[in-house]
Length: 112
Length: 112
Image (cartoon, rainbow over all chains, first blue to last red; front, side, top):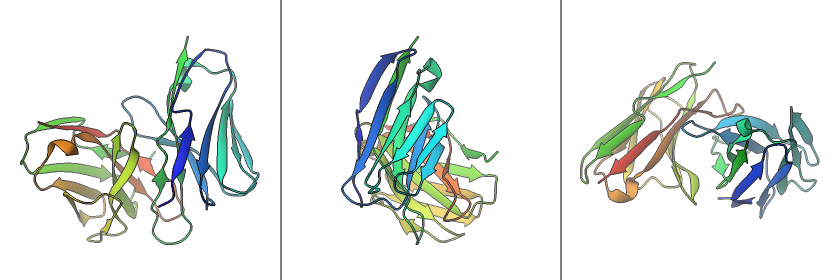
């Protein structure tokens, strides 16, 4: 099972600040997903990145997949309290039955 | 919108009890999954099912079993609950191998 490392584990910032969280692996990702989990709810998929070097934007969120497909980052511009939650990266393997492996997550708190 | 419904948000059970966690999805998804989520350990896959009456072990199946008699329902069974099974349990479903996971809101189980 691939090991996914996320950093930082905890982040507390003021509204309006920018932040970046990271997801790294010891081996190449087939594809990489980012989920957000709000308190009391299940994770919700934000994006899937597949191609090395790929960049995807979702409003104020920018997702980047490393050229070597061993790392990914999520950058949030001008964070808002609604961005508070647990951000999880996950590897979705190619082929076979879908057995997604999750990182531990980055717990983000945005203070108004 | 896909809806994955877990029958209980909170459960308190005693050591040794047999516990049933129920999950129902309303979108005719092929695949269903049970994860547990623990602080510092992230989401870990217990069991998954890719078809009715089919099941596959995940990363931590010990102490658990599952049942999928109908396509829309996937049950997780703790044969004899133990305190180390106190956790948040998340059910998920996906349409096929290439589609994202849709999670329920979780069942927080406490075993005393």
